[in-house]
Image 1 (cartoon, one colour):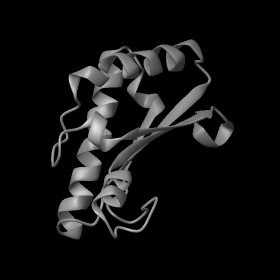
Image 2: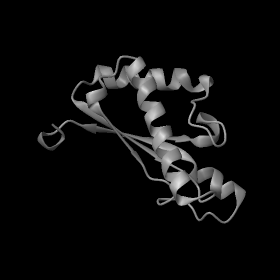
Image 3: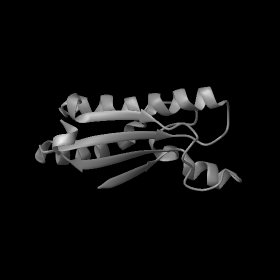
Length: 119
């Protein structure tokens, strides 16, 4: 199961602080994860290509970690969550316009079944 959270809804521009209006959505995600104990969660942060590569990498990592921290505050076991920052390296669309860049600023959550390889 893949969930894509657009950055313009989830985060303010150039920020890793989660918009408080998004907390109920992540609370619902936490409920699902907690209900299905044999799952793990991969959180990937993404940015557009505005700014330096190093800054974008750091921002994507901080955003992924912010989502993890909020989910753990909703009682999700942090051992079941992996975070990774993708920086600007996996755009959904070409960074050729403001609307395209907006699509590329996102956090993706992937809920995966627990397998021997995940343990």
